[in-house]
Image 1: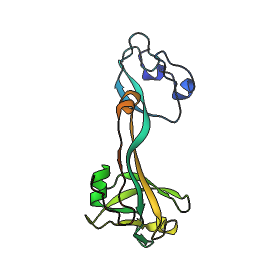
Image 2: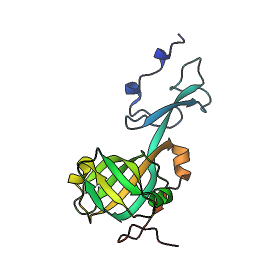
Image 3: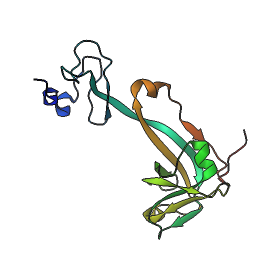
Length: 171
């Protein structure tokens, strides 16, 4: 029949090598994109030229080694980052980020709040303030999902600010 239910369920494909060399994996994201596979593709129905394309998560942005300047437990959550650092690292407000604490190994997932430009602010807000202290050195990372081919050519935005001041170093 022409029903999309005729397509193999994701669980049926796990670990199998597909006709175009990809191995289905439970840890990938999928988008409904045009199929570029000629001939039989196990991922799209007989009447459709579309199938799910696997996306992988790759590093998009990194602020390497900045110093926490504030920790506000009474705030609702997030990390406040100097807008100069956000721009240089290609981060936007409300973007999901991972914050890694070099002192104690803590790693949290939160979102970015724009801080005052040129202030050097790196403030851990809400519950994160229990895992990060003023003076801790942190790394801020964000990831993006993209197809494998695009990921091979992609280059992340990585910045190395002055750790003492959290300001960009002129290159």
